[in-house]
Length: 285
Image (cartoon, rainbow, N blue to C red; front, side, top):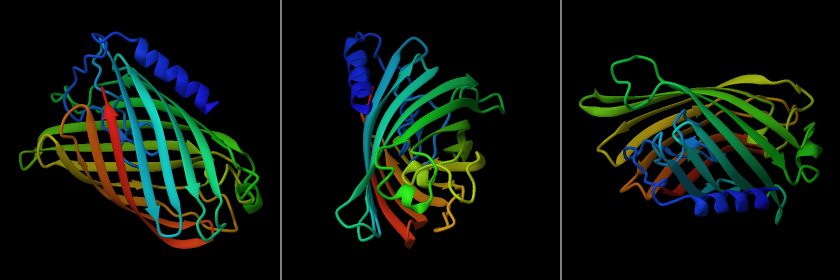
């Protein structure tokens, strides 16, 4: 499914005229790419729409992210298209190497995302307090459910996350620096974002989770910040902890962005106190 959808996305991208892909939005207003494929921070989706397309244009982005976790390896690749700064469609594939937990094995997950801008403009509505709001869904399918997730007590190999994101950029908001704040409310049954399946023996119900981001721009191209993401706890065999990170993002131009982060991921499967060095590159239009 992922391969066919990726082909469709690339065909659409190639079929759009150069004029439509003008990329008229300001630098950094497409964010970077969140690990599940949506425009946002590293671990939290924002209300921003992928790419640099204005309301008269189509934007696009592609990304590769690698997390070198204490006892695991996680890679995520994908692409997204933003239509007229209103709708975002994204695709991502995650691959988790199981390290010493199950040597030589890995778990893959496909994610199809859809985000709809509801109201506001995070950048240009400086005379209003209201943030930009976007409603998003992420359909996730675990390709290796029977390998580890089912044995740990997960109920399903697929699930849908639903989220509402609110994002606001405050121009010259702190000591003359631009400041971005984001809050996201997510409904989910996913264990470790879905990499360990969905639901479990403790709960198979949707739970509301809070996610937040804060960043300050040192100049137009460099931002530093932090993120937090709360997690459900559905499996009695291993407790799931919240995610946190600190990050630096460099966007030298509209074509490319680099993100480097250090993340605290807590317990993953049978390994506690997992920390990660996070690197990501994004190509945009």
